[in-house]
Image (tube, rainbow over all chains, first blue to last red; front, side, top):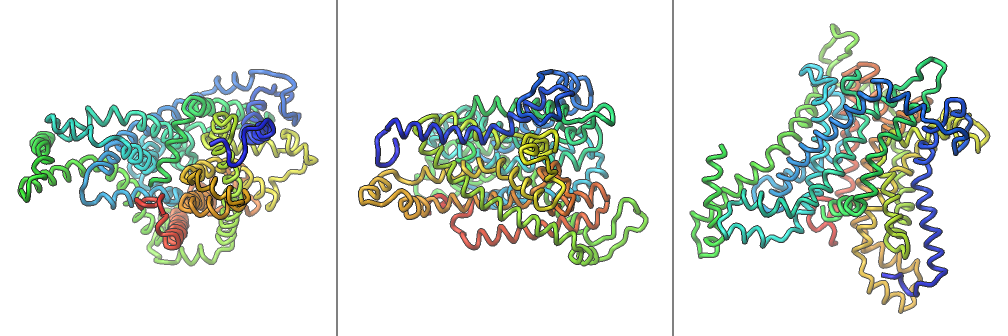
Amino acid sequence: MAGIGGAETTGKRVGWGLLNAVVVIYALFPVLWIVSLSFKSSKTLADGNFIPREWSFENYQNIFSTTEFTRALINSIGIALIATAIAVVFGTMAAYAIARLDFPGKNLLVGVSLLIAMFPQVSLVSPLFEIERSLGLFDTWPGLILPYITFALPLAIYTLSAFFREIPWELEKAAKMDGATPGQAFRRVIAPLAAPGVFTTAILVFIFCWNDFLFAISLTSTEQSRTVPVALSFFTGSSQFEDPAGSIAAAAVVITIPIILFVLFFQRRIVAGLTSGAVKG
Amino acid sequence: MSHATTEDTATTGTAPEKSVAPKKKAALSEGKRAERKLGWLLCAPAALTMIAVTGWPILYSLLLSMQRFDLKFPDRTEWIWFDNYVTVLSNPYWWNAVWVTVLLTVVTVAVELVLGMALALIMHRALVGRGIVRTTTLIPYGIVTVVAAFSWRFAWTPGTGYLAEALGGEPVLTEKIPALLVVGLAEIWKTTPFMALLLMAGLALVPDDLLKAAAMDGASGWQRFIKITVPIMKPAILVALLFRTLDAFRIFDNLFVLTAGSQGTSSVSMLTYNNLIKGLNLGIGSTMSVLIFIMVAVIAFVFIKLFGTAAPGSDDGGKR
């Protein structure tokens, strides 16, 4: 593992350190810039300096004093959590069936979910816009939760069935031998073993819902269900002459916090989740 | 309903034993039937949701695309068959959007493949700081695209941005080619880590012994990479390319924030959105939706036809 043809010399270590530094700077630079912007006072906002000359919290005070942002934050959290919960429950059930059971139509389901994963989402926006308007779902939470579940399901099914294939079969068989029904074997034996995979999938699905912009901007029209990414793009300064950049930056930082926390605490799981589904299909 | 299932499934408890006994067909098929039933029951919620939210809307957008349907003039709605297709396909804005989308897709995916491979090698082989590298590269993957796009927009805004200042305060986002370069840059920054992760999964399949043996035989690092690593991880490369190509083709968020499609920088998604939500022209918007759907289907078909065995979803995809 320690590299091909060569011991771990100091020179190599320094080389790796430099490479790592390049990667870290590459990944963090735009993030640090928006953080820096969010802490600039309104006077120094447009000075073009990478690091604030004057630190202030006024941008954060501004956004949290308007319902435009706080309401959007509630919408974002609520919609993403509900969509994640439903997608993960449905996905777990389907993935269990795909990984463990033999039934006609299984390949069809896998095929359909693969199709949806590749589907150009904008193609759904036009009909959904009209259908949701006539059903009264336009500009409501369910109006966004439904497409989110739909597009999260392929991700959930793929990741979960990859995880489920690694769970030892024998335990389920043993449970059945002891008289458990397949349903009980699912609930009592497999579900607890599958919990880490389910949790990882939940993180990936949440990130997907949290990230969406196209559906959110097309299927909402008021504060009632606008999520933060959309609200951001509508921010205008409190007066015509005020640059909204500060408020946008502050709101952007706020919605980046959950992502940073996930990445910091669950790096290993996220990497495993993203790669397992892709390679094993 | 649940009552019937428990009765049915109760018999499956004994099915494994019976299936060992020779040709007890009735019992076997009963167990099979229960298994089928459970399979369908478990898949039903997912399948029904996916079909309800995509199936009918796809058909509906086909119907809409054959009507003159402008929400600003609802009285003039009528059935016009393929006139919308003629309108769209003879429109220079549409073709410009198609070329912009194709160009952005090809260029960004190509750059991402090279950068992603480098990043994957770094993450796979790093002697020190592997955890830090993996953690930080996940940030561009996870960050909300709109947030990253705003970061780039402000960076290039004259006066506000450090990049704009560094380049002499030229407004780059108001001209077509420079604006597209910035959009491409933002797209590459955001999605290279995802590409790298998929490629890293492929790298893990390359046996170390093989590389060591080749090194013994005097193969250089580059030769080992081209002759051993790349062929073995080819399926992973193709999967990553397919995913990224289809994803890049729907580019919207970055463009919306960075240029809003001005100066001829619209992608097909951007143009559809503008016709639909801003122009409220459901007929034209749906026509574009259908055309995009067809283009994506063609791309996916070509990928799967060309590299069939490596298609995600085929069970042996990772092994060949």
